[in-house]
Image (tube, rainbow, N blue to C red; front, side):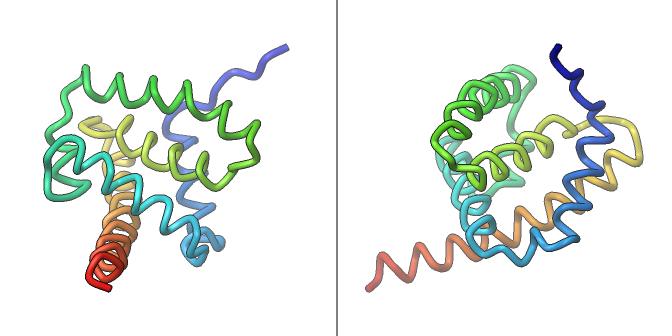
Length: 132
């Protein structure tokens, strides 16, 4: 019997709790989140994650989420749980974008604060690597 997916508000809350319980300190996860956020922004020809997310219409959001849904099981089979975590985190951020619920908006801001910090760090490291 398959489990019903959690409502979006519960998934967002669980993600925020996980980040506050140590997820923020995991450098590998931060790198994966930052790198994926940068890749999405670059693909959309936007300067950063927030600009990319703001530029996405419903169709672009649905394509990105469908791509994550397709890729996640494959990554899990390969043992790439932290990659899955990064995709889920960005997926939740995209899914709640523009929702009128004030609790979701507050949670989105907290999640995006983490994504922005991870992306800035990733871009700095990537730039330093390219200069070396």
